[in-house]
Length: 363
Image (cartoon, rainbow, N blue to C red; front, side, top):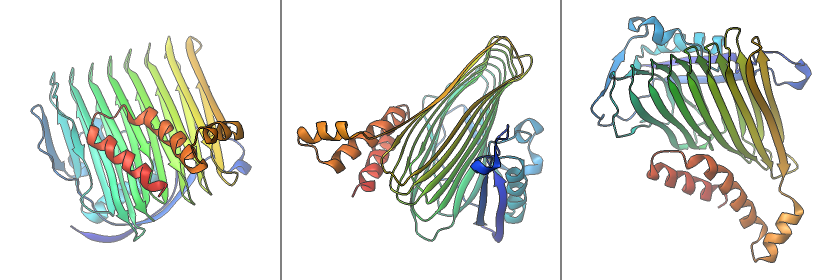
């Protein structure tokens, strides 16, 4: 494994439609070192999916010319980091028409480094992938993955991203996807760990009747931070996008969520919906939410919103009157928020690890 002292120093999660700079919400900044390439554990792949490691220059343009939610500056520095590491791209190809029953579970073999992954789902295929980041990262290094998805005609992809990191790590997930005619992508994301976490995703619905369904749950506690940028860019007719976010912020946690549905001219009869529901547990938290719809097409149906609430004194009193102390009440509320999203992860063992991680947060 080649070593390098490559450093990320760039704006990330650029909001597509800028607002007042005084709000400090238009973009985030990533300053971290990538010391090596990280490899995923190599599972036994089901029939119909094959794995290759390829140099970035040897990949077809349809797999690499995909913007990710972290932004152009990030992608440029990421490519430079791959070259500096002499790293290769993990390419998972799902054969045309194949519908493997097993889920492909991927987790990094080390607690620090970067990885580049492409999921290429050919026509009519159906597949499931789980990316799980876990373990103690007390050294405070960078651990993250760029994931690019090509969903060909009528392909169906189910992906889960699970961040259960402990310690002082800086973590990122940067996702870019393009959906062709009739394709669908379902993304379930859990951001529960890491000291500083960044999540950027950009879904381009270019094909007619393409559909994206996204779910995100997060817990930002202690003095941790989470920076999220979600973009659904709908250019195809009759496309549909949906993003539902459930989160909890406590202690001195800080979170930014940017959500954008972009109806591009020509996306007639397209529908988009994005909703965030945030529970603020402590008076010292920092929460910034920015749901936006951009509309270049008249014949569309777009909805967006953000609901922000606190753990009410009445609710605490009611639970305490039933013999539930304040800490247990907080724990129940947090777990219910996270479980509303984690239930969609197609792996019971992963769901159990999520539950144990949450138990540890209240130890």
